[in-house]
Figure 1 (tube, rainbow, N blue to C red):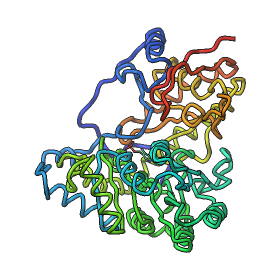
Figure 2: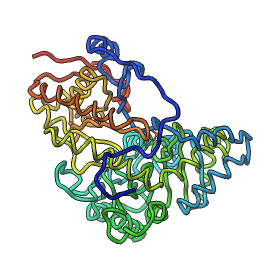
Figure 3: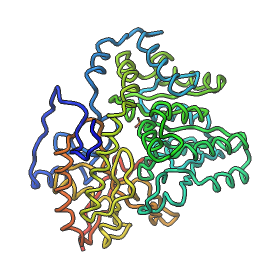
Length: 462
Ligand SMILES: *Cc1c(COP(=O)(O)O)cnc(C)c1O
């Protein structure tokens, strides 16, 4: 390809189409009411552009669909399992590979064993299911993203890094037996989708070795992170994306992956560990709760498609398009005056809703207000990553807000074209007209864990 600036084009063509429904604002107003103003509770039929998540929403390639037909559905020792195991071992350098039905199943297995009351987990930022699985065991999860990672504007290359000084301090202050693990989320999903540098990962490895604690890599976007390492960390500019991923994963003692992200499949997960004793404990739980060791929670065809996806995701043209198309949306939103977390991360654009809707107090969830407006104005589904997702209550039932009130526009892999994204940009012109809005939302129902998935809201009037 020429190096000239040209329109960003998808490095694939379309072989099968899936029609979208076009709806009116009046229709969407009713649909939202029925869904309790929670976009998780909308019917996908009623959504035009679905940017709720990049998880399991990607399009598989013709090769992956061929793999589906070649899947070996044998209960034990299937050919598709051997294929997947070979690919994952080569990628991670870890001996023990456990297939699970999705990422959180891998997390539940690992953290049930490593967790428990009095245990402490330390991460650059725990993803919501990670935190929930840890807290469910009675353990505590602490996030210590680097200081730059908390600044939504500063232009730095690796804002997903962990704060190494704080890590060292926590490991000095807490006895080794109380540490469940240090978990590196790569890229840092809940912290703006920002990448983690190889330098930071290597330092974490050294610190973990010094204190004798485990290092887990939550690496469902390891290929996207490798793109940033290659282009932002000088020592890696000559390495391939796959070489970078291998080097990084090799630093960990365990790896959990939601294959619904960089596995380029619609369902699946992986847990890999280096230690045999730990692998045996994990396998026992896997067999009880997911399935036999050579399929876990997956069909043979799922494993075949995943084995192929884990190869395709490192293709240089794919990764270039992936990262640049996310940046395209973010850069143009910023040019319109929409406050976005900067620089743009790998899988999503995060909007600072507190800054955009600066008249709405955090107790009224400005992020949720933006999520609702995006759906009403354009049929676009997004998700709040703020106090609805991470807020807590103090003893008096007063909201302890999250550090940020963000709205995430996640980009499904290989699904939407440039014109869909241009449409999203157009809808933001309507959002800019709502900037002065003062009324937010109140929560009328919430469950005890992961409330954002099922909570109901009502609009507040002033
Ligand atoms: C998606 C995700 C998970 C959970 O995986 P599921 O497949 O949704 O269960 C864990 N960690 C991170 C960083 C994720 O993005």
